[in-house]
Length: 132
Image (tube, rainbow, N blue to C red):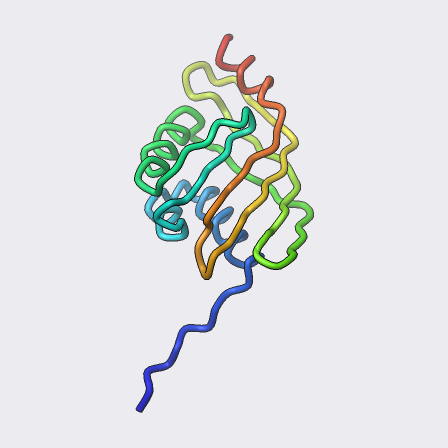
């Protein structure tokens, strides 16, 4: 008897699962959803490559913003690409300053994993919170 093959998730479902793991601050769960050569492109255009590098990056980010959350209001899927639009909210842990920003994300999905996660946002509110 053939073993049951796991049904492949749509790219949109994979991207939304990634957002749920971000909102849960589940670093290990995020890593499970990344390809080994995962690329993270931040809103300044800096590229960070590799699941292991991102494991530490997410830990540090959640340490700085312990209640960071993404709220997706709109999403679009075309092939392996998913565009998400919405907002983020967080409190900068060092001084308690609240940060709310509009943002967008592009996910490139390979199989059931995120190959690239790209953030589009004006991070000035977060930088201002860190300066206070």
